[in-house]
Length: 220
Length: 220
DNA sequence: CGGGATCCGTTACGATACTG
DNA sequence: CAGTATCGTAACGGATCCCG
View 1 (cartoon, helix red, strand yellow):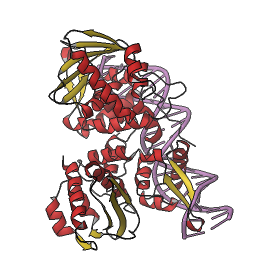
View 2 (cartoon, rainbow over the protein chains, first blue to last red):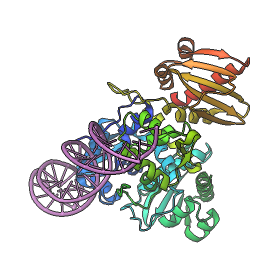
View 3 (cartoon, rainbow over the protein chains, first blue to last red):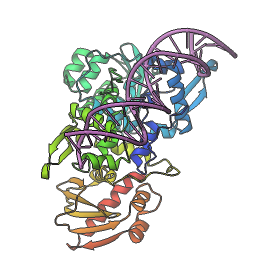
View 4 (cartoon, rainbow over the protein chains, first blue to last red):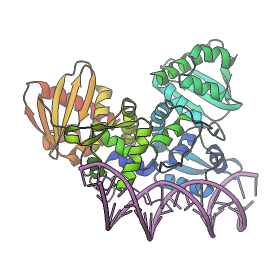
């Protein structure tokens, strides 16, 4: 069942690892930061994690109060982060910052969906956002739609189409990664790999300003 | 040898976990943040990690450029963080922040040495330090001696006696943990669990000010 | 078809013993 | 002290099957 391979050390780092240190666990949380997800969405995004492992991890995460099982539309079961689960955002962000500095693997597997980018982008934006930023944007990354909202100094990014976007930004995953990891500059990224559709004049500048500052965090 | 159980996903978080996600790896880095260490020191601090695992992990960390093997005094071999290895500090700090909010285990094992506290404390201090702070302190935690230095806006904490401490602070590990995790207030911690020996008048105030602000980071 | 449970071969982990 | 060698066990990975 639940892997009893725990450190049980009198140390907060070890206590944290006893909750999220197992294989796959942090990646499951990563995907859930993009919003509630179904079992198969998770299985898909994690490129074929064995279903029994996913079951085990979801079980363990529930016991530790990091996620909750919920009934969604049409009786589908959804998994979503609890308040406490959301506190893993900065761990994941620091890991992304760290991991982004390593060269990419030879033949990397593409994640089954792009939920993966939501934590990193929203955490980076959260670090640089000002209270004045106020917009709702739809990001279309390789066709997958996200809602990026900045309001009252709070940023959120969810894996869902936007309801009333001030601006729609269309881009690709590889280019976005390359820009985040500093391989290509921001200006070149925007001019070559981004298309914008503006519904509320001026909001596209707010969006690009926020994303630009966020990417500087990675460059640091 | 090196665990070929890698995600190889096109995602910076997964790339990071492929470097530090194996069992014990982050705890080894944790201890090395307190300064160079010998094989047996690490083995000891990690409460009996199997020696072959420690060998494997050190090997992997070396290959990834996170640590280096060095020759110390009297021909002893030391392991120490590289520049890149030091970038794991914030990951560990966020993990500590996260893990500290869980209730302690029933019968936790005490780490074999207290190297474990150096990362967390120095990272917390780094977040709140001002450029004016300027002192060298010796922390004696359950008899183990650390050098906490604040100079020019940079904080470091090493597992070694201080050479010329402005102030010596004597305390206990459990009390320090309890204060860090907000179980007891800072004032009560200082009055009941801390003894100070002041060599340079006024520096003890700088130290307590810095530690106080650092602990507020945990409380947040 | 989505959401799992079951089974089984493989791999990494954990403990102990042993060596330069 | 700094590892290497061996071996039993637990966790992982992949496939298949089941149930609503």
